[in-house]
Structure formats: structure tokens, C-alpha cells
Image (cartoon, rainbow, N blue to C red; front, side, top):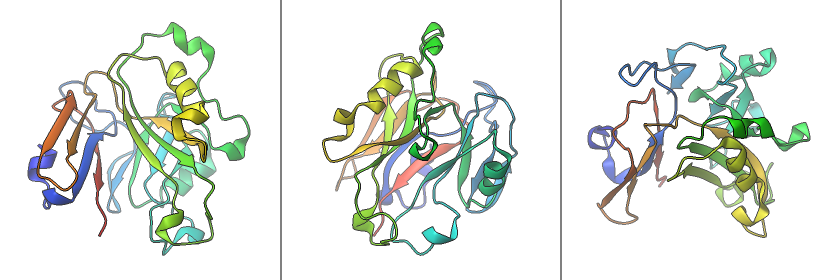
Length: 219
């Protein structure tokens, strides 16, 4: 439905779940949600919603870049939570899978998580190809973003192990950070074929979600 009602369908690359809904029947977003500067849902203090993904950093040094600089803020850190309120586009999700390397140990998921029930997963991850970033503002120096949909039920610990492996990104890059988006029953993705009008759906593209992650091409 999002694809069908989008103002310019030819600009869409992919659509996947972003934030959690109140239930499988209630579309209401659970956790903070801002789109184009307008806030649609308030912050939620539950432990599982431990990250606020901001599609472009609100920090001064990242303004006027030719590319987006996605970041996440820790929901349980008051200073970072305040920073998140300055994001133009943000969604509260979690748990955090890979922490920002500035914090040292990147492991966000502990081994005990493997005792929980595995689920279908939607993950947003960013790597670091160690290009000239920052302060160069040219788009050729941007980091890579990954929107990952699992086709089998997985524990977050195993997803973390995959994302910590350098072979996932290639020899010229390394993991940066990753967060769990809205998965479970609504896990699905809609992809528009490159240079075509063909639309491919995988998983459950009709599940109830609180918000959607829409990737569009930039001219």
C-alpha cells in the first residue's frame, strides 16, 4: 500500500518495516517517530527499544553533505536522547546489535539471548569502508548502509556474529553499527527492479507495522 500510494513510485528502491506497532491489529507506532520534522509518536522507555535511528545526523559538522549520515542514539542515555529530538527523520527501535566503535566493545547482544525464541529479523546496518569520511562532503566518501531481511527465524546473537564478520562487508571495509528494526510476523520487503517498473515482494509485505523504511534514489 505504501508503494502504491507513494507520490513518485519510480524513485523507490525498497520498502521494509521500521518501527513497531502497538499490536498485530493496531497500526499505532510504539516509540518515538519523526518524519520531515513532524513528531507522530512519543518516546517509549521500554528496554528493548534501546536505539533511536536518525536518518541524517543533526550535528553541525554533517550539514550540507552530499549524502546522508545515518546515526543512532542510545535511548537510555539522557544526553543522546536529547540529541535525537533534533533529528528531522527518526524512529525508535532496538535492541542495538552492534554498538558504535567509539564505545570500544561493539557487541550489543549477549550470549544469553540465544535462549530466547528466534524470529524473522529486519536489520539496518552501516559499515566503514574507511574512505575519507569526514570531513569530505562528496558522496563518493559515504559509508555503506544495509537493509537486511532474514528469510529464516534467527536469534539476534547469530545476526550479530554475521555482522561482526569482515567477510560480510568485504576486505576493504569493517562493521560500524547495526540495530534491530521491526521484525517478527510483519517481516517483508518490497523492491523495485533497477531501471524497471518491476516490483518484487519477499516475506510478508502486508504485515501491520508502526512505520516504514523507504529507500529512494537520489538524482
